[in-house]
Length: 338
Ligand code: PEP
Ligand code: MN
Image 1 (cartoon, protein in one colour):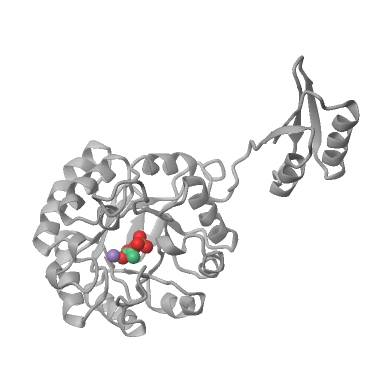
Image 2: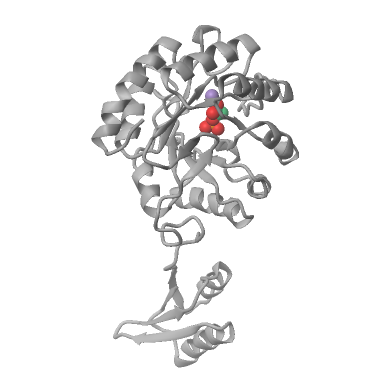
């Protein structure tokens, strides 16, 4: 970190700072200018507590951190892209993956009709919520373990690995028994006990970006998981809150190349929660692949008008098929397959 002193800082003040640094095992590099003195703290890790200590001193103007607040998930730690195997599928490799299925598992028929249709159209992972987070306490919250059993049975029948959300630390072990990928939803990105719990599980985790979270906060959330030992983390951009209300969220396309630059983790785009409108899912999916996303997660329902949840943003089987036919030339144009 760099500590910029106020103009009126005395020699004793400068001494106090260098002594504090040295007593904590850090070096101090002084740069005395005409207007002010700057102290460079030499050593790692950069401590937030120490930065706050310096910031609270009356003779300190500003403290500027230099190092990123995450390590394990950073590109520096791992210059190659991480590839995450999920059954027969690899996430983060040359081939972009498509995860598709209903927002919510509603019934065996609904799940299986969708599963077979998305598989036939080219999806390689089945999505479906058994535990549904909801802003309203009055809406449907999913079938719970019964939904998980259906997802596991759908995997046995179709061969598609399944991704499903876990919302509660108490359910992590159970969800991990049924699912191939654990999804952490946007509302739980900063649920640190849940992040730690999925960090102790031997299954890949897909971490959605909090709808009001900065990229740096999202990567720090991923670091929580990695620090517990689970390095199989997939990021998912699912749109953020802005002043725009025409769409449900605003897809931050910037985030895709940005996290690829900052981190080695794969990143998936969710254009369904991202737009909230079925008509926009296709164009935004294409934009995501063009921007370098390692895949998409798309909501599909045999009859969106009858969907219990997220019908307006769910593709029909037919529109999903059309989208899948449009993606390969775009993937090719950016050096990928799909
Ligand atoms: C979902 O995938 O259906 C979902 C609830 O996602 P998010 O956490 O992004 O809102
Ligand atoms: Mn949904």
